[in-house]
Amino acid sequence: MLNTLSGRILVLTTLFVMLAEIFILVPSVSRYREVYLGDRLERAQIASLALLADEMIDMDLEAELLENAEVFNVVLRRDEMRQLVLSSPIPDSISETFDMRESSALGLMKDALKRLVTPGNQIIRVIGAPVRDAGLLIEITMESGPLRQGMIDYGIRVLTLSVIISLIAAMLLFFAVRMLLVKPIKRVIGNMKRYAADPEDSRGIIEPGAGIRELREAEEALYGLQTELTHALRQKERLAQLGGAVARVSHDLRNILASAQLFTDRIETSEDPLVRRMAPKLVNSIARAISLCESTLAFGRAEEPGPTLSLVRLGSVVDDVIASESIAVEDSGSTLTRDVPGDMMLRADPEQLFRVILNLVRNAHQALISARRSGVVTISARDTEEAWYITVSDTGPGLPAKAREHLFQPFQGGARKGGSGLGLAIASELVRGHGGALRLVTSTDEGTTFEIRLPKGQDII
Image (tube, rainbow, N blue to C red):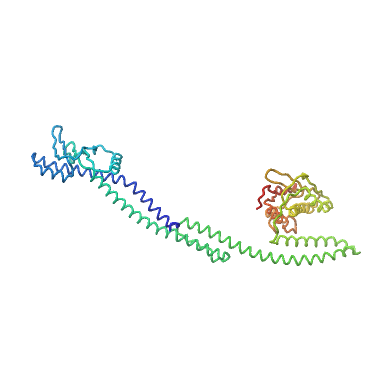
């Protein structure tokens, strides 16, 4: 029970009420002591009235009056010259004197605590003012034992009442918390469990209905989260089904196009001038279609292996990229350059790094071709204490606004007409596998720059 919200509130409420009552206990006991002593002074004053009525009273009556007042001596000073006295033998010397006429609240509490911690039965003198202005002062001597015992009994009664009040208040608060907080929270928890069992079933989405503002805000936030998650899961399922269909179609289409590509070699040898003029366009169209199918299949493979990290000489990877693309770049009238330190070593998967840089270089080259102008594509690199940086820049026309808006999103971030946008999505995914990031640095009318950041730490995310 103690590990529940209502159980802990029950215990804390009991403790807090008890703590409050303890702070009340000392003033209460002090007040009891003040009333007790005032009562004894008043009794003594009433006993002294017998002496006022008859100046000579016998010893038995005097003893009875003192016994009823529970004092040993009574001194009533009515004026400066006359004192009325009732007396009896005092068993011991007076240990302490208390003047009730000049005591402050703090002084009364201090005297009460002192009396509680002082055991034994002592003789004390108490001075006070007579009631109804019946004199200047009244003075009595009495035992402290009955006073101390009365204070203890009174304190026990106060503590007992405090415990009862604490338990009643705690139980009331316990049931209130269960009704106002625990039950609504359990309702939310139950809904979360039902929703977790089948998050695609919209019937499991919570309906906010709590009367407490904070709980209702939590339910509304949970409602929004569950609604978005259900829609996302449904969309993900549809995309997965669509992706499977696209992968199957792409696979079959790639095989068909590969067969068609074999026939283009014979078409190029045709003597018909029209056929010879149209053959290169047909070959390029088929090549682009095959490339699209291969990119789609590569992106759709969930079993894309993680990077196998090793120390790689970046210059060797860049040389392989230049060797693969130099002919195509030079045929278009553009230039492919490099600015990579020859001794730079970095930790990466050489095959995946080659694919990323080659993809960026091809995108830059295709941007220049689409703009129908020649330019320069540059591969450069630098490093800091934290990471290696590889940049691929061009002097092309820059990326369209739509491409920049959906950059790195498959089938949406294509920078040229007919592009699929898979190249940058695949490149970004491969770089993230290295624990790094691929980002667009600039894209203006004067050119575009992409940057690859690979961390030098050992951890891979």
